[in-house]
Each structure stands twice: as C-alpha cells, then as structure tokens.
Image 1: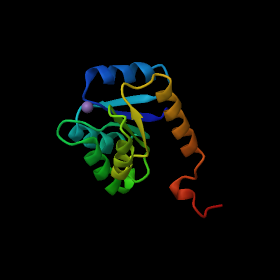
Image 2: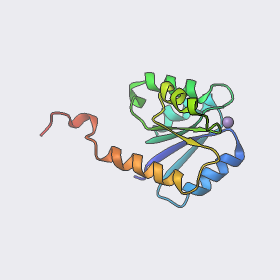
Image 3: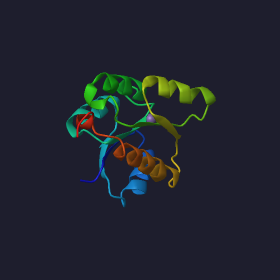
Length: 135
Ligand code: MN
C-alpha cells in the first residue's frame, strides 16, 4: 500500500501547491482544512506522515500535534510543521509541540518530496513495534 499522507492546511493555494507537488508520486493524500478535521481524519485514516500547518482555524497545528502525541497510535508518526514564519524561534516552538521537523511556506516543490521521502525511508529501516526482541 502506498504511504498515506495527511495534509493539514487551511489556505487553498498552499494546499493546492502541496497536492500538485505530491500527486504524481506514490502516496495516498488525505486533506484537512482545520484543526478539528485534522484530529478526526488522523484517527480515522491513520496516516503514515502528517504535514501540519501551524496557523489553523479551530485548533492550532501545535495543539493538534500535542493531542496526537498523547495518543499512542501517533506517538511516533512523523509530523512536519508548515509555517510561513522563518524566524529562528519558530523551529524550537514547533519541535516543542511535538513536530519532528519544519518546512517553511510556500513549500519548495523539490524540498518537500525530498524531505518526505527521506523521513519515510528512514522509518522503514526501523523495526516495527512488534518486532522488538523477536527472532
Ligand atoms: Mn494556515
């Protein structure tokens, strides 16, 4: 099965750009336009990776990430923060919320797939939960 990516983004132009960047690759894309929808879709769809806008209606991307991290299902799902602010302090603040890394918007159409691919490949190499201590 192709990896499933949940894209959380309220800005239609940014959403479109990410969709166009990723749609020709072997991913299943699921889209949410606000924080509450993001939580509901994450639980329903169990994505392999989440692209998380930070400024969102209803719940911020940080709040969504914090709530997901409390759920064991999402304790180590890769979450990439999307933020328009390239300020030095932003990186630390999204990492504090529980995001793994950070990409600034509008996304670079070559950087985004490269970052996703690298994270998914790295995770593939890790043993799955049930494999610890097995044969
Ligand atoms: Mn936004």
